[in-house]
Image 1 (cartoon, one colour):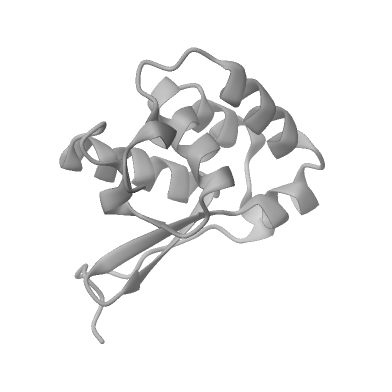
Image 2: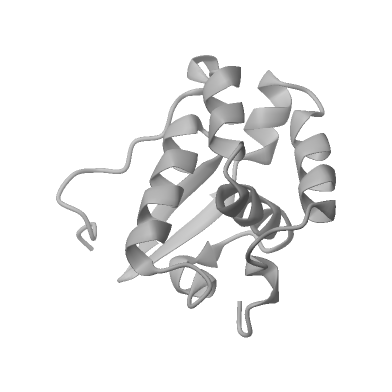
Length: 119
């Protein structure tokens, strides 16, 4: 089946991970909440984040996370599935994601993506 987008999704390789780009992506509370959610709900479709995050804002946040190497996205029919690249990140930056997930889960987020019904 053809991709949902006109251009293929690009994901950085392990050796292309940039710690500062990753930390910059995680500095946004919404993106941090998305990462924490994906840590506990791998393979969550984009629709799992609605209505807490609007479609266009979610698209931008997910693109930033994908381009930083934090998530991997792939299309299944008309659904885009998102997963945290924890194993890859642990290989490049050992224990970083454990710390991010633990601290992020304790943070006071403006939205609680994980609490969305049906997510």
